Length: 197
Image (cartoon, rainbow, N blue to C red; front, side, top):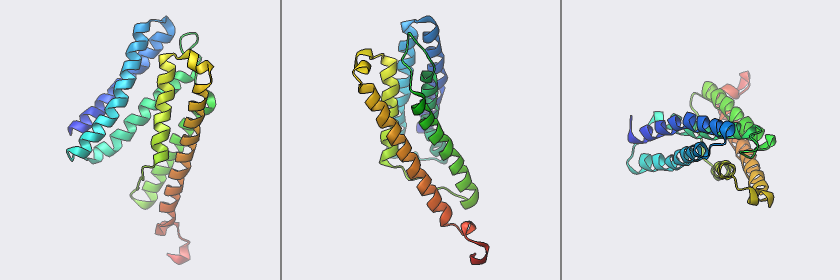
């Protein structure tokens, strides 16, 4: 249990706190709840960089960390996106369903694909791509934008542009990961016709 893994676990523990605070805010309009939810989301997002830096800088890479770190990222973003997909008016804005569907659909496909590759090939090689990192950043920007209630900017159409960018980069990163997975499957003997093995 390295320091980096402890920070990752702290990030996971912040997720239910964030969800509960946002639900309380939607039902009560209490600004303290919104601030607490926003703060917990921001801290969990910042700690994502901190645990990665510690793992690299102090050579604390572990197999547990390679599972927990992306899991914490997905749980944080998906929980925020699901909460913001409901009609939370008049307190919070709402994410468009197409963006929610794109993000959750991509994550489901990647999860299923990872299991298939692992079962067939035995190991899976994940190549982090710039499109995936940009997609994650844009998704976080959209969530924070809604939590900050920047109504004036949203009316000007800036939020729509960020949402569109998040959707496009999410879809593109998903297609690239699917391509990588199909390449790994295609290179394995189990994918060859019976006569060519």
